[in-house]
Image 1: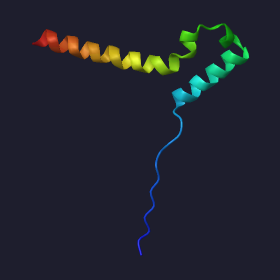
Image 2: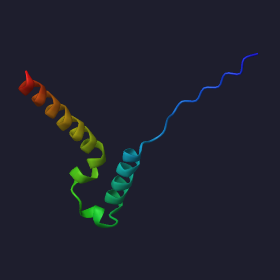
Image 3: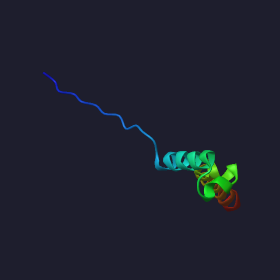
Image 4: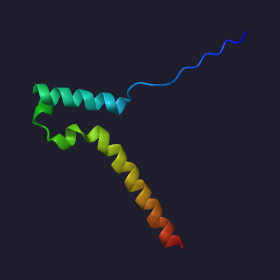
Length: 67
């Protein structure tokens, strides 16, 4: 008899949770978030992507300069 158990990690990330909180606060009109631009409400999604894109560009530029 074999006792195999597997579990998959699932769920929402901390940035996903922050996005949902910002979205709900914006839609309900609560707090200062209601006055934010939609760009800032969606920032937990696009800021990490922008950060990694900038790091990638820096690496490419340094590699071009070194060659």
